Each structure stands twice: as C-alpha cells, then as structure tokens.
Length: 395
Figure 1 (spheres, rainbow, N blue to C red):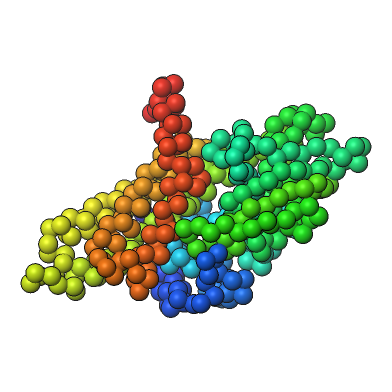
Figure 2: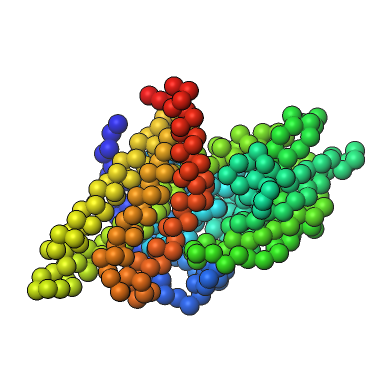
C-alpha cells in the first residue's frame, strides 16, 4: 500500500481545511441550527459557500457536478471536512445524501440520474433512504422487512404500503429511495426492491420527527407512513428483487465515509482538549504535564492513528475493485468505538468546560455516540465477523 498523498490531493485537503476554519467554524453557533438539524435556508447558505469554494460533492463523478474523488481521496477530504459538523453539510457530502448519490451513480438509469442525481449532486435538493422500520420490521436484520410492493392490476404500477422510522432527512427531502419486499414479478424474482418516489407522492406522510441525541442531520430523523403509495414501473431503481444486493453496495462504502467524517470530528475534539491541557493549570503545572491527562492525550493519538490506517486500508481495497464488505464492517466497529473514546477522553480533559456548549466537544459527544448504532450496531458487525471467522474466511 502506498500512503503517499498526491500533490493535487494535498492541495485539496489544504483548501478544505482552510474553508472549514474560515467559513464553517465561525458559523457553528448560528441559531438556525436547531434540534432537528440546520434549517433549509441555513443549509442552502452553507452549500452556496461550498460551491463558491469549489468543494461541492467531492465524491460524485465530474459528469454529475462533483470532483470525482476515489475512496482514498474521500478519506483525505472527508476527514478535513468533518473537522466541523457544518463542513460535510456545506460540501454536500453528509448522510444520507452522500450514500444515496453513490447508489444512484452506480444503479440508476440515465433518466433517473438526470431527474434525481444531478440536482442532488448540485446541493439543490435533499433525499432520504427508507429501509429501517419499527418493530417487528427491519432494523439490523433487513430480512424482517414488512413494507410491501404489489402490482396494481395490469397497469404496470406498483403500490407500496408500510411504515418507516428513523428516516434521516425525511422532512424537507425532495425524494425517497424506498425499500419494499415484493412477490415474484415479470421483471425479477421475489425479494426486496428499491423504488424512487418524490416525497409529495400521494400516500407518503411524515408522521413526526423523533427527538434524538444528535442534532446535525438536516431534516432530523422521521417516522414515515406509506399508505397506498402508487409509483410507475419507471420508479424501480435497478432491477426488481435486487434491493438487498443494492443495499449492501450502498452500505459498505457508506460505513467507511461515516468513519472518515467522524474521524475529523474526533481530531477536532482532541485538538480542543490538547490546547486546554497546555494552558489550564492545576496543582502548579499545566494539566497536560500530569500523567493522568497526558496519558489520555497519548491514547487519543493512538486511536486517531489506528482509525486513519484502518480507513485507508479499506479505501485501498475498494479502489482496487474489491467489495470490502467485511473489511468495512471491521472498520465501522474499530472507528466508531475509537472515535467515541477520543471524544469521551477529550471531554474528561476539559472537565466542567467539557459538558457545556461553550466548547464544541459536548456537541461532538452527542453526535458521535449514535455512530456505534446506525449503519449496524457494533454487536451486529461483531456477530457477522465471527461467522466469517468460523467459516474460515479470514486472511
């Protein structure tokens, strides 16, 4: 593996770091950032800044308005963007839109790309991904999907019924990618199918927005009912019956890009704690000279290094054309737990200041804790990894 960062990518990282430092950090206390993410006017303002800086949608192909970075390029730039929670929003590379763009670029037909991907890559619209359901529906086990898609007679249309929850960005989204189970169909086998549907389609209703620990996801996390939602055959994303396969194609790189962004957030927390440890004194010495604090900073450095090497290795595999599904599971567990430890230690170093919003660490603490749950809890990934070990699937 070559860990050298090419000159053009190093320059892009420096531009991203300057953009975050000069444009994003000063806006972190804007009162348009509420409990359910930034308001739409604030998001559009941030995206306009990202566009002006030439940093919009770095993960999307140039033909669709992005910068066309490969996975290793994303690893460098997404970490720099994540140094402020507003950075990925302004650069249009935050969840769920970033992963939805990747999915559309890989699976959608040309008409669907023009209708949905191009405005999404431009930052003009938002989207949501509807897979998760309340019990007894699908969560960590997607095979428990209860939302159904049935044919509407001989019309060629599909009718979708079900309930989705924890749907990030549902409020304000222009369209949804809906996962539903289907019977055998002339277009494909029984299984799950993905459908593209504008959010103003009759029968789609956001019932409520959940109050959650995190607060930076645009549109929050909603509960959505799907009642007799009728979509044409042209709404099928990819092929009928291939939804589970497409979900894995979406999730493997999405887990990794989450790791990239939150690594930037963890580095920010560590930098804040380090600066504090240099200047705050106790018992006649700067805090950092006390071993109890110094050792926490050292552990942070090691966790950050481990995350970066793990992300880079997984990105290298994906860039070589390897699926990287199991590696992304390992990266997700390693990074989500290490990032949590870094932010938690940083809060401890800050003491009383750490639990206030006077420092950003408390806000980062609220953001990174859910990362150990979404895109598969650590325990589910450990179970999957263990099954592979028992089958002799390690290298």
